Image (cartoon, rainbow, N blue to C red; front, side, top):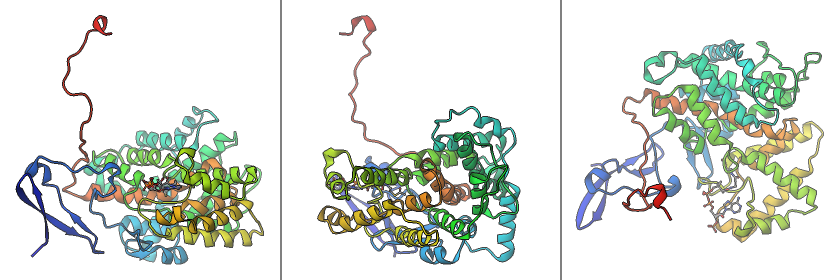
Length: 429
Ligand code: ACO
């Protein structure tokens, strides 16, 4: 017999079924609550609300576990590539050799933007943040490729998904070149995904960028580690927009906007800004830790804390090790890495952070790798967006193929004025 939860309300008793996931996560299914009781649930920030059933990513925040389609992130980071992982996330299984070849070919065939898209870049001021350009240009793509709109054109999903994964990288590189007043560099079909992005960012018409394998590998790892993370702010936004059966590109553009903020994807930029400010001030980190614990200071230890992880973010562990490896391979050092390590050690031994279970998240060390790769600060969140595209697309696909999917429409508890009459302008005090 399936389990149920009992609710006693106003002298009446109600039962709500318990839903259990494949990893024994449990939820009360309250879809009948309002009709049965006249009440809704109130869950500010959605910390206790499951908005969907999803088979893509599993996180156990207490244990520090992250798996894409059942496969631990540590194994993928060690043995897979971003493109193969993107396939896994979108299609649910690791590809065969032939499937991977076809997927890679689709990415290559769709890497060029429609040539008319290039003119749009000229309309942005040089000071525009690349995330603003990215979301605007992805949305502009829906003018050129209006096809994938709701279930009617779901047969074209493969091509549209590949186009989005491939072109987000081209748009990102073009935005960077534009922001620096540099000539645009077109993608090269012979290069693989991540090498091609570095080529478009850093090659010059008169000089090809030298692709170092350790640099390509480190950036590919950053993309892979960001590829999905279940119902975070941007992915939930993508699902919200997708639930109205909007175009895939429009959904992805909305995801980019949600990702931009410093409490979400923008944290990787904020971390490096914080470390740099600490470095320039001559602080060894201790003054900053004191300020981060004081609510009135308006400061937080950026790259620390997570809504879900109450343990070390497994991605942060992998990135920290990769950071050490990359700097050693490049024979480089970075004073910001030393400050980061000192901050981490201090925070992990400080009762404020320990009691609140605040650990380093994915953004704490990723910015230092990106600095070592020569990626400019304002592009950090764009790199996150490129990496997150497979996750957004897979979540879009779940909605596209779910015959029972309904438009997302939360409710609220109204706290404004009760009924009152309109006062004409000449009678107002
Ligand atoms: N520094 C100092 N104090 C913190 C921090 C931090 N980084 N994070 C949380 N806290 C404190 C809060 O002040 C609060 O204290 P209180 O209980 O005394 O009021 C407590 O810890 C709980 O914090 P909340 O803000 O309620 O936690 P929430 O789950 O809403 O927020 C978030 C999570 C946004 C990630 C938060 O930890 C934060 O702002 N971190 C810094 C920004 C950051 O690194 N964001 C990237 C997240 S990962 C990602 O999006 C890819």
